[in-house]
Amino acid sequence: MENTPVACAEADTSEPPGISHYPTTNQQPPQSRVVAQWPDVAREEWRDWRWQMRNRIRSVDTLVDTFGLNAPAGIAAAAERFPLAITPYYASLIRDADERDPVFCMSVPRRQELSDPAFLCDDPLAEDDDSPVPGLVHRYGDRALLLVTSACAMYCRYCTRKRVAGSSEGCIRGNQLDAAVDYLRRHPEVRDVIVSGGDPFTMSTDRIEEVLAALRSVPSIELIRIGTRTPVTLPFRITDELVRALRRYHPVWVNTHFNHPNEITPESAEACMRLVDAGVPVGNQSVLLRGVNDDPVVMAELCRALVRLRVRPYYLFQCDLVRGVEHFRTPLSRGIEIMENLRGRLSGLAIPTFVLDAPGGGGKIPVLPTYVISTSPTETMVRNYQGRVFTYPEPCVAPNSFGTTGATGSSATTAWELVTGQCPQD
Image 1 (cartoon, helix red, strand yellow):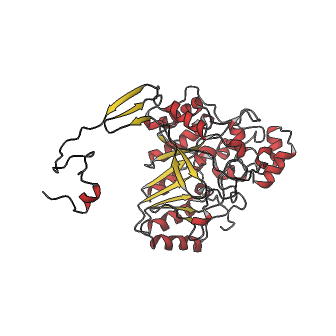
Image 2 (cartoon, helix red, strand yellow; image 1 turned 180 degrees about the vertical axis):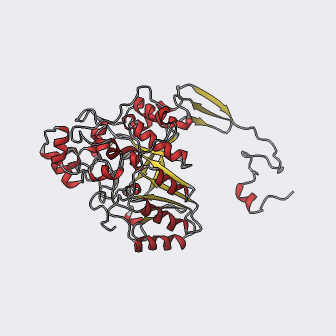
Image 3 (spheres, rainbow, N blue to C red; image 1 turned 45 degrees about the vertical axis):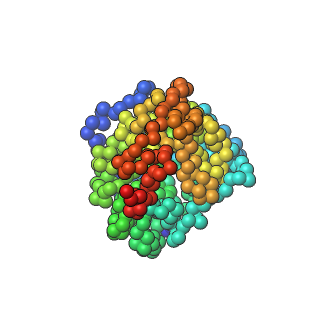
């Protein structure tokens, strides 16, 4: 990554049609408020994403001045080990400057980050081991991950890539992008590329287009996905200029990252609606975090609010085994409990998949409640979300259209026999 400015495009302050019809949650989320650090900032400047990037809270001294904190040594030590950055917008969402506030917990360094159990590591998903060229991770056959920047608008305290995030703020170099594209050309089995970082939307629109155009030059790439938290931490980045650029490279999907209902504001709703109205499908990937969203009521409220914005709850991730996040981790059983609570109480469209990204590069593993109680050749016993038990009769053994005895008979035709033309002859 080269150390170049990551924000260099024109800001857009126009209101999209229909923004007055922002779909509220059960309790109207508060408008973001300008905290005391920025009392005289004009609205146009406040909504300029470049101003937000330039004025991020980057030091403990600024953090103390902004919130009037009594900064213990642990906060300073955590910030020294894992870089600090909070946009003024996201800082303004903090209602209580202490650990009772979920936004505070996700953005402000805490001494607990210095806890370092032996099972935590810098690269828990072994991304470096699956990187054939710098900046590209190829783990699954038909998908690849392209890391295009080390910068984020806000450095989440639970980040999986804490080993690189914020250490320097630069973008992928031209020769690195060329090497990644060359690899993709030589591996046409890759049809889906996820553009991530850092946060790709902290780059200028011209640089984003450079990446998208390079990927679109590879004939075998069908789908481009972009992972970004800017709709949550820097919603003013989602300008008309940006969405026009994205439309030129469709199909482009965006996955964003809301963790708590307090992050859904009129500004973040506006950002999501700009993307969706431009034909960019938006999904959400939350992380299960102790003291933030490890509550079925909180998670249900978040999921309902997201679908009202036309944002699909996609994944709920178990927290990765990365250094500095032990205080955020929950038992897997808590995630299963939350998923059981959501089932039957929310539309299936609003229910994410709870997944564990297996340590050491094992990939994503769905972790699901068990609804099958027992099974036999004649019936299967299942339970529903209420705990009621039902018996489902299995199909009777009967001749099928191929003249064989069916799925449970000894002479059943297998799928392999069908596709290879090895069906038994009459």
